[in-house]
Amino acid sequence: MEALGINLGYLIVQILNFAILFVVLRVWVFRPIVSLLEKRRQTITQGLEDARIAAEARANAEKEAEKLLAEAQAQANQLVRQATERAEQAAVELRGAADREAEDRRKSAIAEGEQIKAKALGELRGQVAALAIAAAQKLIGEALDEKRQQRLIEEFFSGIESGKVVVLEGQSLQGQRAVVTSALPLGAKEQETIEQDLRKQLGSGAAIEFQVNPSILGGLVVRLGDKVIDGSVAAKLSELGQRLA
Image (cartoon, rainbow, N blue to C red; front, top):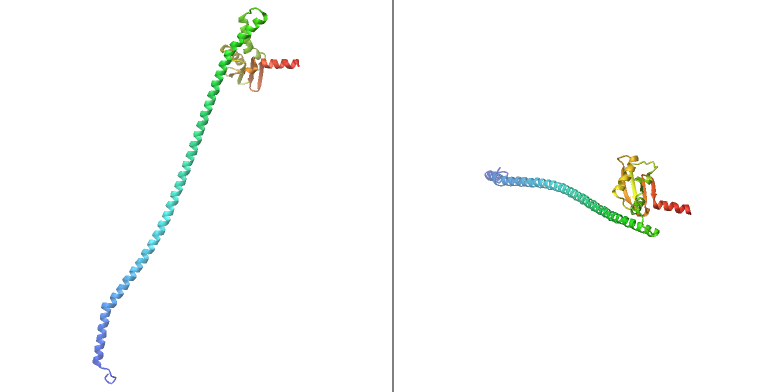
């Protein structure tokens, strides 16, 4: 060793120093550094894993939020639609109620008007009878049998002679409903007589309605479905005018 210029003792001391330095570095430097790096690696790995989990959680939360938002929007649309439908239905019901009320008022007004008209025409019938009797007496210059004149006038307006409805004699009646029109309102006994004559052929269950139309002047017009039996004074005057023409 000396021939090579190497001091054996010094070499051994250097080797021992290096060994001691290696052991010291390994124990007090290398291992802590490796441990620190491992911990740092684990921390980074854990951080990345946490970040991945957080990203997945955020993505899931966003999806869940979108789902909840869509459901809330659908429910809101449904509520709006239901509210709109209820509002429309309520509006229809209100319009229907208003229309029905208006129709009821219109019918009530018409019925009241018909009652006033019938009352006025009923009063007019008595006045016409009185005027007719007075005119006849003035024409002939003497007093007439007032009862006979009254009977003639009643027959003129009711179309009933000797307890029978003249316009129905010899007629073949068919139908379930009859509409009887007179120039002035008929009395209760006159209506009863007409009903009896009609039901002899129509049957006891037949519906009979009485109407007033001053334009027929006198007599009766009986409508049975499409069939019309016209015994009015207006019709007789029209027929007489045609014959004279």
